[in-house]
Image 1 (cartoon, helix red, strand yellow):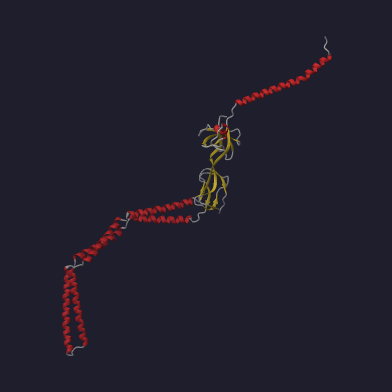
Image 2: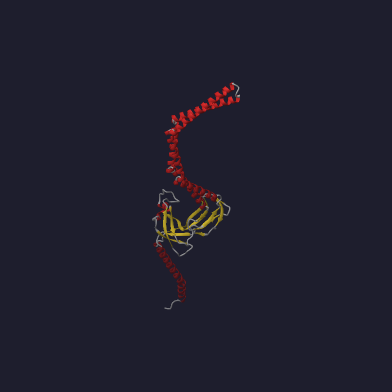
Amino acid sequence: MTENPPAAIARSTLHKRWSPLFWRAGAVVLLAAVLAGFLFYRQQQHEPLKVSGFIEADEIRVGSRVGGRVGHVAVKEGDPVSKGTLLVELDPFDLYERRAEAEAMLAQKKQTLKKLQAGFRSEEIAEAKARYEQLQANLKKLRNGPREQELAAARAQVKLAQSNLDLADLQHKRVADAAAKGAATQDSLDEAVRALKVARAELQVRKENLSLLKAGTRKEEIEQADAQVQEAYAAWKLRINGYRSEDIAEAEAAVSAADATLKAIRKQIDELKIRADVDAVVEAIELQPGDLVPANGPALSLIDLNHLWVRAYVPEDKLNLKLGQKVDVTVDSFPGETFSGTITFIARQGEFTPRNVQTPEERSKQVFRIKVAVTDPRLRPGMAADVWLGSR
């Protein structure tokens, strides 16, 4: 039976209308299935934990322990310097003069010590010995008393004085008789009287001298002479033995004190030159010749590029780390490159949340600071860095 043309036309129009809708629905279902599969795959993958931070370095603030006026600035900001490089030099003021004075004082103290250690000269010892022997001989003389010859001479002088007295007395009598008869002048009589008195006095003196010689030396004189002998002997022995050990020790202490003073001044002079203690980079310097630098105060700051690290913070629930652990570090400045790092510090206390939290959610908010040391010379302080705490 032949189909009705209007009905066939209607079925053909309906087929053409629903066919694109069917294919679109199929594409949507397929896309949804792909997305669901991708999400399931992503859920099964665990991206390693990373924490972000910045690269830091040791800041070294160098200065002088003496301070003073800036004489010369040898570097500028950003200059790389090696250990021992001169950075700033200060004016010496009076340190050079004080050093010269200390050197002279040390030389003087050394000469004094040398003199004490050497002792007395041989001429001084001989002089002391001669004086001792001289006084000893004098003491012996006093103890022995006058010699027989001296006594004999004293007796003879007494006899001579007696004879002179007898002669003067005889002449006086003759002049007196002559004067009584008018045969002699008054002057002659006076002269005879004077000569008689002189002769009597001379005799008395000679007799006293003889008495002294017979009596011998007084006890006090012998004791005095003996004391002088003992003093001279001690002085002689002193020169032989040299100076006391206490005097030498005192001189040695004076030398040590003068030497310490000189060393202190020399160290102060060394402090006039501010040098770099390590290989570093000049970070900040604001000095000009003529500026005053305080003692024990920082003059400029250096950055030690040999000790770089990344400061980062790790959540408490990821703190399964240990010191010395090796980790990977990436920086934005070198995309695609990985640098080796070592955990050198883990904080003992958390930050940002209270210590006594009650729920796991709150505990996960607490973080602990860590330091990861890096050594690549291309890295610089201030770079943003990521620390990967697991295998990538």
